[in-house]
Length: 280
Image (cartoon, rainbow, N blue to C red; front, side):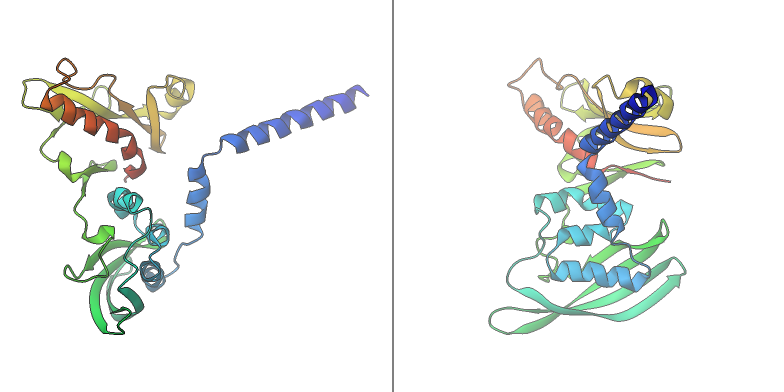
């Protein structure tokens, strides 16, 4: 009887643990698994799947076939478009791969032709050059060049200059283009941290946020519990975490231009999490 009660207790405990784990499992895990299901076995498969996503105006499908670098670069633009690219009219009626240029076993460039039409039945063709590379044993899109005067790229991130990619040896981060010239990057090797500071017209540079590298064991011991760190990713036993500044730069002058600008930038910091990508 005691053994039965013990087994029952263990079973209940296990089930509770499983339920608890399932309850806290982030939506990102589910999305990541779905995206993995869309992996392409060949370069042409990746290009065709991406182009079909463009034809269907499905930003989520397009995003699933992008390289890590392009995901980081285009995330914000896709989110602002609510993951729906292009316009209802004109639209892409069909597309075709017209040329293949195999640069290596891991890189192929394709020329694509998109046939565009509208309710008037008039048709025109637009061109695009799409590069596919082998990344993590699957083919992904690493570069997209579209007609600047065309309509296929309208309301898509591929003609957008709203964000730029900040890169270090081990990570990349998409930052708003409006931040160019307004940031001071400070790398602290002793703290293993990269700080992003706001450069106002004053003498002092105020911290906005930082990216810290924390040993996985330290992260498990205390990093998750402080509430100061936001998990970004991990690689080779190192956890990358975002630390937001506790005070808005130029807080002493809330009516000043610097404070107002820094406030807007600070409000965008939490969105940067989705564009972070570990490199190497």
